[in-house]
Length: 53
Image 1 (cartoon, one colour):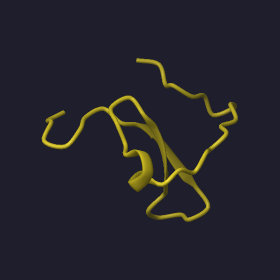
Image 2 (cartoon, rainbow, N blue to C red):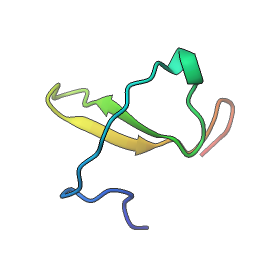
Image 3 (tube, rainbow, N blue to C red):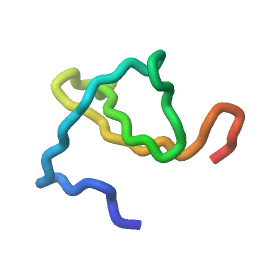
């Protein structure tokens, strides 16, 4: 499966509180890399609470 974003692409991040809208299946989220604060991880949500992958 091809990645959603290529390394050369730019991403506009809109920071909206999870408490405001929630996170749903299919959403793209940005997370701080656990080992390097200068890097971001970009992931698509594939399952909701109680669902198994």
